Amino acid sequence: MAQFAGQPVFIMKEGTERTRGKDAMQNNIAAAKVIAEAVRTSLGPRGMDKMLVDQFGDVVITNDGATILKEIDVQHPAAKMMVEVAKTQDSEVGDGTTTSVILAGELLKRAEKLLQQKIHPTVITEGFRKAADKAVEILEKMSISSGIEDKKALKNAAMTCMSSKIVVESKEKLANICIGAIEAIAEKDDNGKWVADIEKVQIQKKQGDMIDDTSLIKGIILDKEVVSPGMPKSVKDAKILLIQSALEIEKTEFDAKLQITSPEQIQQFLDEEEKMLRNMTDKILKSGANVVVCQKGIDDMAQHFLTRSGIMAVRRVKKSDLEKLSKATGGVIFTNLDDITTDKLGYAGLVEERKIMNDSWIFIEDCKDPKSVVILIRGGTELIVDEVDRALHDALCVIRDIVEDQKVVGGGGAPEIETAIQLRAFAATLGGREQLAVEVFADSLDIIPKTLAENAGLDQIDVLMKLRASHQKGKNFAGCDLETGNVIENMMESGVVEPTVVKIQAIKSSTEAASMILRIDDVIAGAKSSMPPGGMGGMPPGGMGGMGGMGGMGGMPPGMM
Image (tube, rainbow, N blue to C red; front, top):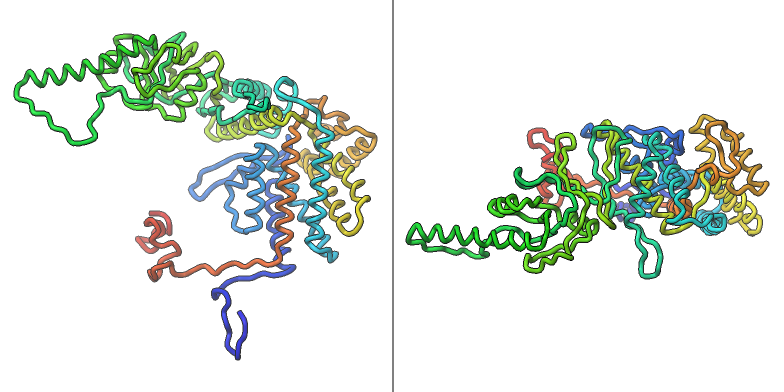
C-alpha cells in the first residue's frame, strides 16, 4: 500500500501479508529447522518410528523420512521446500531421505549465525556451493569400486539400509531376495553399462504369516482366478499364450438386424457362432499352448472348448501385467490368433492357482530367464506389510545404485567425518568471507554422526572426538560402533556399506534447498478470497468446482460431496 494525496493506494489485494528482511529469513529458517527436527530421531539403526494419523483416522507407522514428510500436512512454504528435498532424494536414489533433510536443517541453523555476523546471504550460498562441489570430489576419491559381481558389498549395503527398519531381524533374508530380484532384471545398455529398472520388480503384499515368509518369485503373480472351475488349477512346463484380443464373437460397430423366418435359421446362427469359437480354440490347440492369458473377455462357449482340451485360461488381465508377463516368460503378446506360432509362446516351469488368505491368485513361476520378477511380502498386519514394502523399496534402490554407479563408501558417519576434516583444510586455502561458509558447511556434516550417537543413547561429543582422532591418523572409513560407543577402524570390513551416489545426492539436494531458502528476503502471501469467481455469496473458495465444497448443505464441510 502507498500514500498518494492523503489517499491509500492498494498495489496488492487488501489483506495480503508481507514479511521482509530479517523477519522473513528467520521465519523460513525456523520452519525448515522444525521439519529437520521432526525426522531427526528416526536416523540410524537405533532410530525410532513415527505414528502418523490422518484426518480419516488412517494410521501409518514408519521411520522412512520421505514417507513421514509426505504424510504430514505441511503449510509453511519453506517447510514445503524441505519436504521436496526428501521427495527428490527418494526419487533419485531411493535412500538417504532423512540424512538429506537433517543436513539441510543443520546448514540453515549454522548459516543463521553467519547472518547475525552481517555476512550477506549470497556470500554464504556461494561458500556452500564451493563446499558442496569439494565434498562431492572428496567422496568420489574415497569411494571403493564395486558392482553387480560384488555380492558381499550388495548384501551389506542392503542390510545397512534396512538396519533402522522394522525388518531388522529378517534383513539378511530380505537382502538376498532383493539381490536376486535386481540380478534377474539388470541388463546392459547400448554403451555397455549396467541398468536396473526397479519398475520391473512387481511388489505384491498380503498380510498373514511372518516377515520371514516373504519370497522372490521368478515370474509374476496375477490377482485373478482360472475362468472355469473345470480347468486345471496347476500346469507344469507351461507354454503360455499371451493375447490382447477377446476370445468372443465380435459385435458389429453399427446396428444390425437379422431376419429369421424359421426355427432352423436360429439353429444355423447358433451353430455358426459355435463353429467360429471352435476355430479359435483349435488354433490355440494347434499352437501347443496349455495356458492362455487374455487381456479381454473369454466367451462361455470358448471356455467350454478350452476346458475340454485341458487348457488353463485367465481373462481380463491388466495390460501392464501382460507386458510384465511377456518380459518374465519371453512370450510375444498376440493380437490375432492367425499369427500364433509355437516358438513365440512364453514358458514357465509352473502355473498354479493358490489361495492366499481369502483371495485366489495365479502364480507363474520358474521362468528360464525372467526380465520381470515378483516379491511377495508377508507380515502379521497391514501396517507391518506396508513398512516391509518401504524397506524393500529402499533396499532395491540401494542395490540398483551400486549396480549402476559402481561405487561404495563405509557408513556409520565415516564419510561425513572425513569430508568435514578435508573441507576445513580446503577452507584455509580460500580468502574472504566464503571461508567461513565452507567451515560452517564442514561443521554441519558432523550432525550425521552426532545424531547417530544421540539416537543410540551415546555421548555425542565423546563419539565425535574419537572419530576425528581416528580420521586424523588416516583411517578414512573409521566409524562409530553404536552398541559400545567405540570406534570401528574400517566400517567397510564390519559390513556397514552405503552407495556413494546416495551420499552425493544428499549433499547436493540439501545444499540447493538451504541456498534457496537463504536467498529469500521477502515473503508475500496473497489474501485468501472470501468469494469464488461467479460471485456465489457465502460459498467457500472453489465453491462449485466439480460439486466439491458446497458449503452450507446440511452442515457438510467443503469438499465432502
